[in-house]
Length: 80
Image (cartoon, rainbow, N blue to C red; front, top):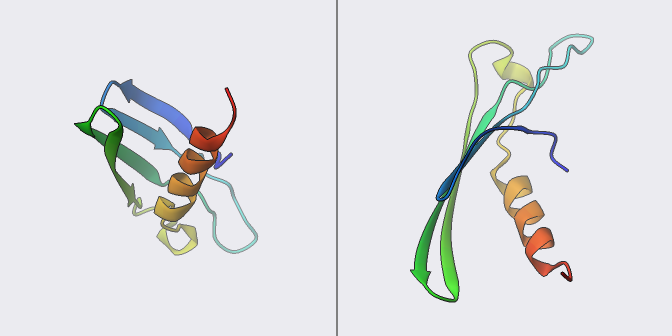
């Protein structure tokens, strides 16, 4: 839902890249999001999310941490 292309998909790390879009003044996209997972116990997992912005188009980029976390929560709550 957030529009990231998954670049790495490892058991405890996922990385995605947001494709660049050209706007009227400043393009958006170009951010890379890393998600680290750590098993706390059999029923809990700790998650760290970090957005890295690229130098090109930084004015149109944003932090995606909250949106990625919200999407993960929606997916986990969805009935199987």
